[in-house]
Length: 229
Image 1 (cartoon, rainbow, N blue to C red):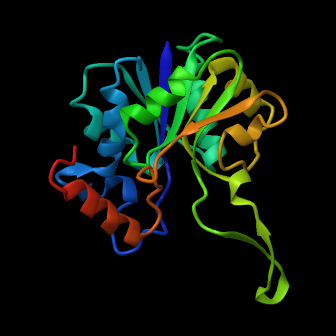
Image 2 (spheres, one colour; image 1 turned 45 degrees about the horizontal axis):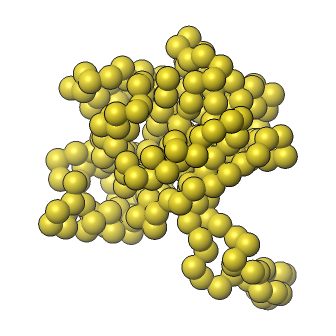
């Protein structure tokens, strides 16, 4: 089976000017959480979805998802960090998943994920590996030093920008989290670097993480363009 853990547990404090966390901001009559959920809900290869919500908003998440009955959607309260929230989702899946089942972990703040991105990852999931969506670094990169100095150019051909989805076998990622409880990793492949092979697949520049009010405005423009999903 293939499961998705959709992380929607943040408080969205960097998105100012809105009375609610960013996952509940509405564009074209849908909250951002719903926009992020639909690509996984409509993907024929994905069997079940876990949404990790901030504890204060579990009922709002339940209300958003109650109309969707095509596949099971589980909702669980998150933890104080992203890593703790992922582990909450994995712990719920412990009741449903077998060791070799596949788990896709995605940040709900990356609203414009789509089927081609998901398929590129799933098609590479062969053997006990980890996978992450990435995009190439397009800008010139420089290392910074003290007193606002720039010290050296970094070869951007050897640098990628990490995104989600990230994909693992259930036992592999569950055990990695179990052995790192209380850590502060901000993505999941980081827990497995040096332990298993980590591969990458192409994400998208549109698969950006909504972090600021400017990101909301950009997303609104993209979603209201003629022909947007």
